[in-house]
Length: 411
Image 1 (cartoon, rainbow, N blue to C red):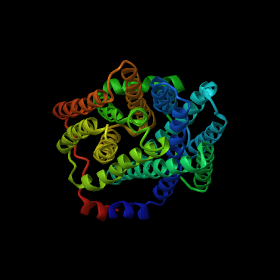
Image 2: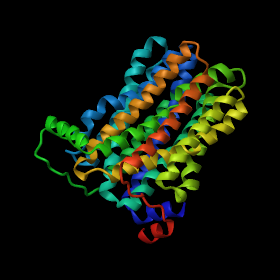
Image 3: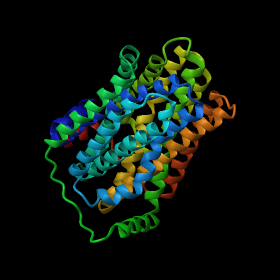
Image 4: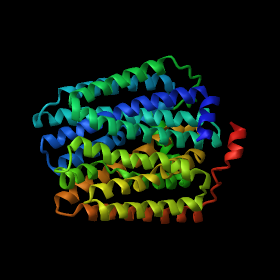
């Protein structure tokens, strides 16, 4: 943990961006509990819940082909400020959703909100390699994941209690105010990053990206590897678990908040424990361990308390897989293509997450048990592990480097 603190002390821009992440992510997950609580109170079908979960990821898929060239053409701070405003207004408008008749408006607002969130994320992740060298970049990615997990934990748990005590509307209002405070913090941050001018138009930039991926097959392989982490899109599954198994045990918002909070605890602990041991071959076993953890969850999910405990294990390996595979891609692409490749990588990742959410709803509505669905997801991580083995045999990949003593000296 001291390594992350030293990184924040030595990199003031990263420190401010991290604070902005913490605030905006907290607000996003805070209102997410309100959205799923609202849906369950409307007594919507499993397919509607799965569709809403899918929308959270699908929005990023549709905007990714356009966001990459835009990111590579404009200064990041201007883009990020504009995106935060879009997220703020879309979130505030959720206050006016009251019944099943407003579902189309809910879909639209979620789509806009999450497209903005994905655009912001892609912009920031393409900015980090321009600010940090490889050693610090990996730690920044890990820290980003920890911040996401911490925000997820606090947002889901506190959100569940606030929704239970004060209601859904207040959660949406607090969320919009979170975005406003993030906007003010970013507005006063000085980021001196120029734009690499390519003299290409929008279409040429897109065509150039595809040509680059066709030539650099490793980049595409690493994008597919990262997409396996999209199988951790458990939101729809958790909502259906609460509705099926725990509805009579405690309030919906509290059950949702606790389950997500315990999983997020694992998300925070994972990189802290695992990071100093990681090498390519070790990550293969992390993929396998993720599959085992999800399998255990499947067998105990009908018991609320055992499900809480297994949720920690499910989250434990996820952050490491996300940050490690992301950094591998960042290290193996040309700086000229950062924005575009990261955008397409996010599109592939979000497509995986959206498809996972869709299949959860589809299988659940066709009388496939939640336990069976969860076991199928577990098998996907095992496949991901073997795929990484194939990548390692087909390419010469340098280790990212996890020497913590050297890291401290570098920082």
